[in-house]
Length: 265
Image 1 (tube, one colour):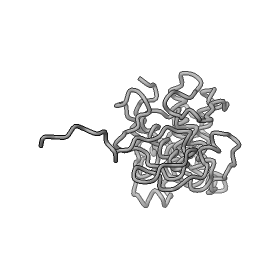
Image 2 (cartoon, one colour):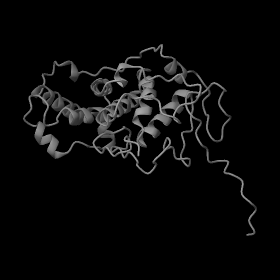
Image 3 (cartoon, one colour):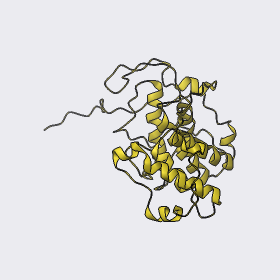
Image 4 (tube, helix red, strand yellow):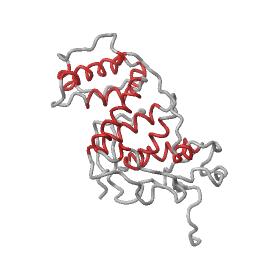
């Protein structure tokens, strides 16, 4: 069984769903449900749907390059940055060695590469996860603020980490986006633990909101992933251009089931 197929109830991929249930029902392949496949849009939108799906099905290591590339597109991609941070932390905690592309997740023409330093080191990968979560949390993504509060409040963390954990707890409680959905994923035990932690001064830069910054990438895979393509690509639309989404496997669609022998009924 893939070591990435596990349940991390303390981490969230964002959106309305607060608890991440990483399914263990699929023991091989991507874990894509043919009854609910990614339906596309632009190549970037398809890539995001694909990455979210395989991540939630236990393949965070393969979703990471996609999510990181998309997050580099800046404002509007906060959920991609958040999901990348969650995946990086999970992959680091389940570390068995350097990450690499596995068969079945990327197309033959893919320019995917796992040569980045954070794919080669457990510590670097964990630090990358925290960095990504800091970016989305600072930009106001509530689930990232909640994850950081949990991560930084672990029993062995120094007082400085506990102070920052309390800061993220406070920002989470004040977050208007969280209040819209009426969610609260930080339990009483965590809140009691952080109650006596020193709270950083209001002048601390982490209190201030900073939008994501777009980082134009020279990475061939990223450029391929975000290339301009048709919108509306899905089971009931025209197929994509020959070069669109060539870095990812085509989704299975459900509008054309296999032919069956005529029924007598």
